[in-house]
Length: 219
Ligand code: DX5
Ligand code: ZN
Image (cartoon, rainbow, N blue to C red; front, side, top):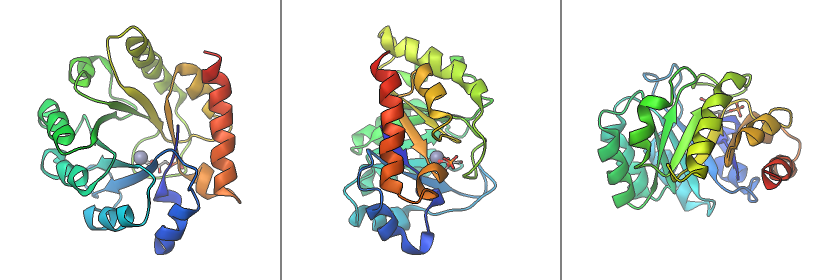
């Protein structure tokens, strides 16, 4: 699955930018609060407006403090998957239950330096694991291959039935790096600049999906 990130889109033309990625599996929406990360993007009112103009399942990535207070609103608005950061959540198990009760999938994200092990029990309650492959905050950064060990570990746990979730990766994914991520076992690839800086975003999505499928298909 390919989830283009609208962080690299033209914020003055978001409806058109959603139309340009009609072939995407999910659309990834980065919510940043200038506290959890040193950047500020958009919040629930913009997400609600975007949900009205697209049928692409929305993947909301909340890079915010106190997600226990704010995340459920995104699920209630109709987001398909709502991801919170393990480093910010107060009661991540309750939060997963609340997100699912509100009709969304629940996602847990870990920053590049956050180990996977302490979160394995919590992850039993989650539908997606978002492994950050850049420090969260900005698009267009370089892929950190050192996070692939966590991806491989999560893949093994899913394949052996210890976890039941989609493994998602976010940051620095492009036609060069997607092979490494696919080999490690990623199911869903977020790509911001690689899609929106391409001349044809639709073609960029297909090309990324083909590369990943060639590797995962043979896995
Ligand atoms: C970074 C965001 C990413 C970002 C990815 O904090 O979470 O979703 O948009 O952008 P690229 O694909 O350009 O690294
Ligand atoms: Zn993101």
